[in-house]
Length: 264
Image (cartoon, rainbow, N blue to C red; front, side, top):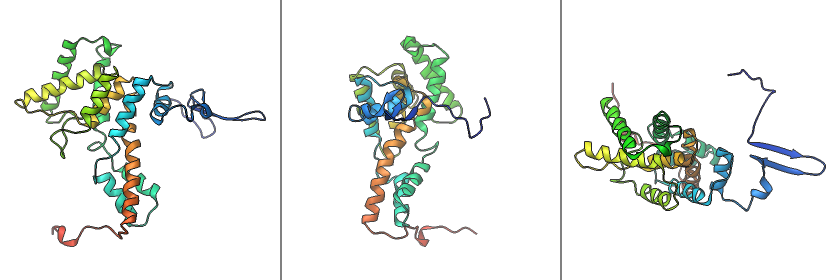
């Protein structure tokens, strides 16, 4: 790890070109002017993170994940954005505040699962696609057993507001239709089966965070990108909630005093 001053920067992401003969922005070596209008936003995200364009099946699965991640009602992040609106802040402040509300307990569980799966499967084989089903099942059982031994939950499973996350199966189904469902997706299903076995048959299905994790990994993306496929679409939701709150002309959202238990 090298210490860098503020004068030296290196990037393979983008290059700004401004010469007597050309005005252009190159993104991963491709002209932004040519990408504009010819690829989707989901494809552009993949290009930014992976360095190359996705296949059409990969792009459709990624787009499905982005759409499914856009909205989940008046949850804490949208509540924050709406409070900001009632306090008279700007839309970018409200969206930033909502994004900052995501943490390891909410919004970050997909990243935790993706990291866990990436570490476990990379320790077994350089190419996870080569790992046989029975070995994936052994790993699923070990992951669940270790979580239970620590008194923890496996991240990415179960959801308080639903018996089953209604967004997750659709994304998984599209991944299977498009042929991008791979070893990480199968490991996710096997973990689900093991959780059900330990709970006497009661299903604890993957939520959208968990599905996001397996989709990202099966698409060959770095586990550290997982949160981006939640935060990016949800920023649109926060903007919409901000504008709705402004239209309702609320002022100073607050907690009524009689809702608070004061302890001496």
